[in-house]
Length: 202
Image (tube, rainbow, N blue to C red; front, top):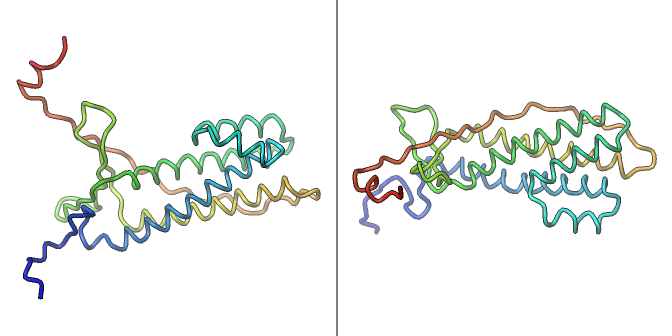
């Protein structure tokens, strides 16, 4: 028998037990995003003309550089404006989902002020030394919407790849879809003490 009190959260994971469904949804989002990211690369390799060359090219690129390359190549080579518009949308969706996924995945703690806020806070470290940390608000519904959009993006990109890979050039039919809202970051400023001020350079 465990005599320890039920604290309602797991210290190792810094999350309340009520967040278990959200964490399960997040694990699905992570895998689904990986699929969408891979399909984004495959479409870029198709543009470059050779998968082996393309994979070597993208290996050293970050996601933003890949997105920039995709747009530049599409505008340079694609004559069908409808397809260009689809590429532009895919790049926008890729950026939105990348940012939302990173905001959640890089969080180190999840807190919930039930009486004050509608959704849990996903807290992560800040790269700005003026801040203690940053956080966004997200619940399981937000994560599921991002997961579903990542699935749609993966299929959307796969259809574009088939369009380029096939000699018959089957027109893409997968509809553009609604994107989830951005997960907005909120900063918690660091409170400087007199000692901090005195120890600051200058």
